[in-house]
Image (cartoon, one colour):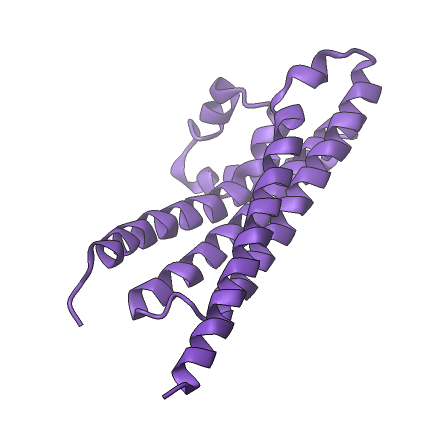
Amino acid sequence: MSNSTVQTIARILKVLVTVTFVCNLLALLLVPGLVYFRFDLEHIQALWAYESDDCFWNFVDLLFLWWLDANPYTTALTLFLWAAGICTAVILWQGRRVLDTILRGTPFCPENAVSLRRAAVCSFVISLAALARLIFSLYWFRSPAPLVSYNALFVPIFAMFGLLCLVMAALFGQAAEIKAENDLTI
């Protein structure tokens, strides 16, 4: 079977999604330390200014020091970023699975409907986590300022993405059923 334009685009997209997935997993490891130091890059760079023997222990400190901070806001931010990061990783992995079926030449299969439903659930989880963090931030700061943050924007965006994934899952499921019926017809 010759490569169609769609399969060429799917191959390129799969590479990009894979790179993004790997970067997402690496970023998940760094979230606690970056939140603990509140993205103070000078302080983080100072951790690496010591001898090379200390670099490993400085990295361990960067990963785990955040638990020593008793600040509830830091903990809430870290948990939110972890939840969003893990759900994003699952969404990217499900996207890879859909791209795999396109590369195989079988886009209308039940696998795609399942993958899109999983992506929808993860999108709703991100939306709920953003809503919880938004409510927490409103309480913590006692100000309407969090209403103009990225968390307020995440709630409707990921809710709509989840709904879109559910619609696409239903369409792919129905297309798979129609394809299966047509395959049985002589």
